[in-house]
Amino acid sequence: MLVVLGAYLLTWTLYGVIAKGSQDLHTDMTELIVWSRDLALGYPKHPPFAAIVVRGWFALFPVTDWSYYLLAILTPTLALWIAWQQFEDYLDPTKCLVALCLLTFIPFFNFIALKFNVNTVLMPLWAATTFWFLRSYRTHSATYAALTGVSAALCMTSKYWSICLIAGVAVAALSDSRRWAYFRSAAPWITILTGIAILSPHIGWLEKHEFSPVEYAMLVHGGHSIIDAILADFRYLLDSMAYVAVPVAAVLLVSRASPKTIVDMAWPKDPDRRLVAVAFWATLLLPSLSAPAWGVEIHGLWSMSSWTLLPVMLLSPPEVQIPRPSVRWIVGSAVVLPLVILIAAPAIALVLHERGIPPELAHARMLTEQVQNAWHDATVRPLRYVGGDVADGVAAYAQSRPQLLSDFPQWHTKRVMESGMALVCFAEDSDCIAASKTIASGNPNSRQIETQLVRYYLGIPGQPQRYVIFIVPPAS
Image 1 (tube, rainbow, N blue to C red):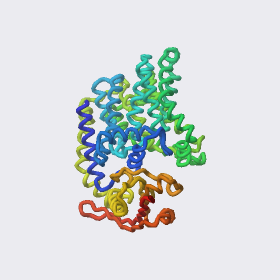
Image 2: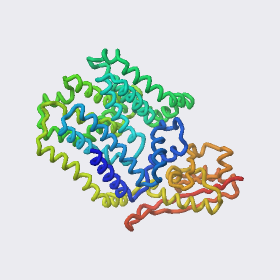
Image 3: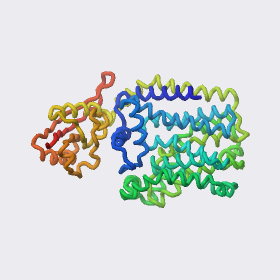
Image 4: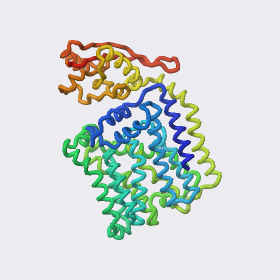
């Protein structure tokens, strides 16, 4: 299975490199590169774990597009490996193989995972948390209990959405008929204490910084009326179901499940399978129950880490039997599909290019070269700070590894002015240009450069975009 998953990793990485060859790294990915260069216990938008992962990864690999796509696909591949271990607790060997193949039909485990961000990094963490929790609950093992606490804390230091997972497994534990035996054991208290110990530094950072990531999340996704939040709930549920429609339809089709069997899939009577079902449904549905009360708009994309238990529910009923020809069809499809997609990768890149790549994705690397050349013409000192509209991309690709002026233009510090900076604006962004001119006016050696960039792919030009670059050299 390690060899199979290794082939899966390499195939989808190669697809990502080719299919995204007409663009640069997504802004979510370049933002994490910038954060990883200045590690902290938290950031204004999100907790720190994704940035820590990126920092560790690029300590081993060069900062290139191919290595980042390798990391991006490695995360769902790890989730698949963890899921494989979990399947062995509930399914026979043939069903384990089918279950793993079914997960690969969910686009979260390949296409969508190519954009590495705080959602992607949750996939193996949620898979590990549920896996270790279920084993801890059944065995009362101190080892699995501690591992559950560790992984749950790492989930929370990746994205606060993980509170849904913690609430979901808590509901599963409290609703199970064996709960008194579990809570009389040391297991749940080991989990809680371990999780708090690992999470406490970040909690301290949150208090010190007035819970700024929570404030950011509410600013971006909150403030909606109850009606709007309820409508978003329906979209969340519909979108979530749409993402997993292929594996669900495949099982129902090949097993010819009766209504009674379908009910047993969704809500089994067996205690171990019921525990899985409650953990699955509670984790998936609790957000839709609480979001309207908070006026928060939730999105189906956020369910991407919720699905490793789905094949257990679909395949664990004894009445579900997958005929041998259907097993071959499912496994064969799981093998052939990535190869077909890989062959189509150049055409996909061309279609995306002709449709129009957003300028911050199309021109980041080209713009970085122009900024670096202009900076080196003005000073021999390294570029330390970048601000403006495309600052994430420029900071990520620049050789001097500059820091991002994330609160541009609402700042003025002696250190920044003494080090100098490069400010990059879209030509049509008058606010950015006006702020940059004000800053540049304080340095008589500042330069303003206007440029137009066009990205070519296979000799075909993309959409042109004009930029204004301000070079503010060191003041001393």
